[in-house]
Length: 200
Image (cartoon, rainbow, N blue to C red; front, side):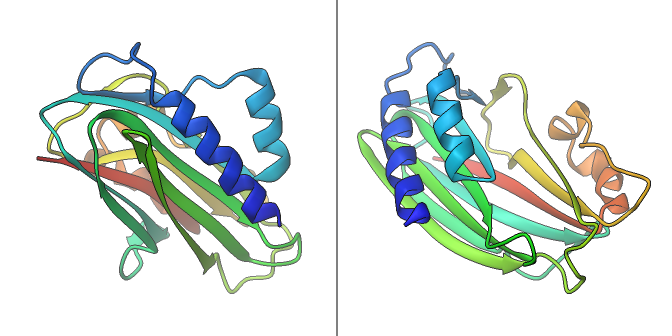
């Protein structure tokens, strides 16, 4: 039931965001949510990332997926993936929920909304074979406008560690130079990266 409520709420939020003409052409930004929307989402999801984009007519297709890394090494194929046609502006959403405090299973939902329609994909993954006791989590997203090009973008990250010394999120520079700063994720036992690619 919680997942259904979350899906309905996200669809409503991103559909309303799609009319946002304040986003400069060919850029993607963190969506500006009202305090009420933030409160509702915090009650129904563990983490929520929502982004608004405007592409003009240069791009007509969008690919979004999740990659998993263990100590900086890519694990197999992408965990989740969604691709859809887009028209000029829209939104991307990504949510996570953990099944329980004791469980290491995470549930993800990926979605893209554009031109009044929304497509989404639900999936799950075992974060680690370790016991969840002592597990720490940090997450972050790009915090400023990023130009949309033909290159892949990293929009957000969720990092897990069992290090008693504590942990901090990835640097803001990471999102502007992912390949050059991949060493940053080597200190985390598990990292999920939300990636996207605009295509024409």
